[in-house]
Amino acid sequence: MGNQLPFLLLMFAVMFLFLILPQQRRAKKERTFKNNLKKGDLVVTKGGIHGKVVEVNENNDSCVIETMAGKVKMERSFISQEMSQRRTATPKK
Image (cartoon, rainbow, N blue to C red; front, side, top):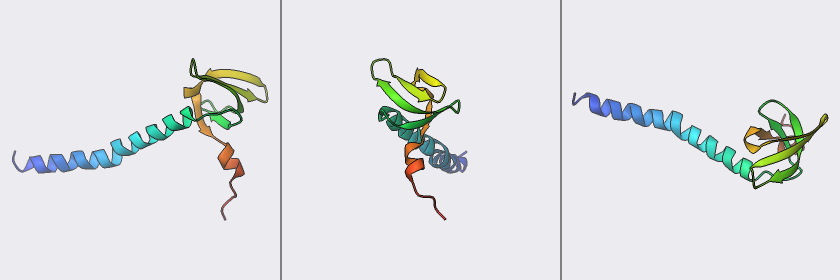
């Protein structure tokens, strides 16, 4: 049992470095993105709907997104990613 303890600690450290730590970083990045959401941002929802943020409501954590079909009110947690920066970036060769 004495020989297995360092091995178990090493396994836990490796799991922490490769699984838990990157997930925490990703969650923090997503949280700051959703908190910094502002009017005029081009976004994609988790359902694949592309649109532009028209209104952000801080009281109930929702936003209104304008799509080609009309306006849709949804929770901020349904926003997947911002497309404004991707559209203005120059393509790499």
